[in-house]
Length: 466
Image 1 (cartoon, one colour):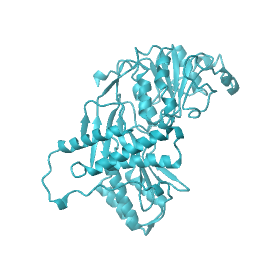
Image 2 (cartoon, rainbow, N blue to C red):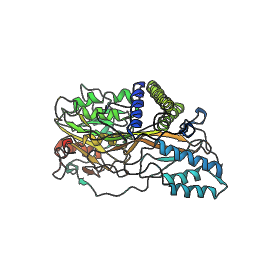
Image 3 (tube, rainbow, N blue to C red):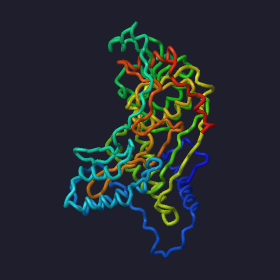
Image 4 (cartoon, rainbow, N blue to C red):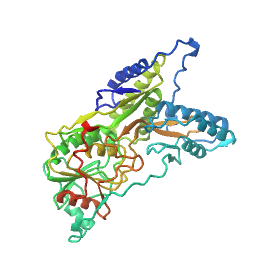
């Protein structure tokens, strides 16, 4: 495993500039190992398989296959996991040989396998407590079966009952809509309150209590124009006496947008997430498959297509360069970053009180944002547990060529620097909000200050103590 000593936290394979450094790193990883004994040319490793999905098959429906075909698809699935899956720390990325042998025996025991049956067998074989790992197929009746077992339970966080709820009942939807007003002098998307996760990607409003509320509903690259305004919004909000960041329903996306927002709130050093990235032909091809399918389905807004096309080109160049160097480089290298520190970009510390409102819809890059902001003195996380889908990300897509069964697996593993995150359980809020209007309750907390039982994170979040 190769450790990065001074990572560039603005990294991501979105342009061709990343290809050469990754190739060099992979070569170094190969050279860092003890030299292997010389072998005859006939014993050289076979070239890596191609797991690129043909354009015509990106969303093609599945089919029933024979036992022999299912066995070959199982072997391709095993290869994809061995070569591309980052996996959870402390767990092997692929099942044991004994488990593989049992699955092969089960496949030989039947003459034919329907796609949903094969997907279920693969899920049971490769399954892990990983919120991103999934099996299924496309076509007219698509199937997506997650591999995660039932969510583990955890201790109940502190609860908050809004004292002002007795004096002022919750406003009706009509009254709430009338009470919303944009903040003067800031980029804004002024609109009535919406359901969590619904509405513009970024929306800044304030209620009649005067507390600014910034809703960030996605970090997806397709919303890049709106997300580019987040650092400027953070620079203004951090000077307010109190504000709320509503992250309910935010299923994640590009972590760079989340990180830039967090760093614009403070000047303090923050512990970066530990990261382990798989560099291999299979990982690059699988991530390219995922981008290509989004483009083919028309899921990308026209304004964002150039970014996706550029990202796709970089991934395909990376896959080609890695394949060309197969004779001198290991098939897979894991690049690891641990103990890194990122410094806030603001002119000073957070001046007011920041309340981050979350629910089960907050996942992936949304949870990665929380891993940073929970270290900022003056920030409080309230609401419900997050989804618990952060530990393995940067999803790659594979389609088994005979059955058409699909695998979705993460090629990057992440770890919360404070150690408070659990996959599938998520982050527990500092204060649990169970009222009918959690946004109003969050604003009341921001306006009045923290309850006595709420944690004070400043001292324990020191990167120097890691």
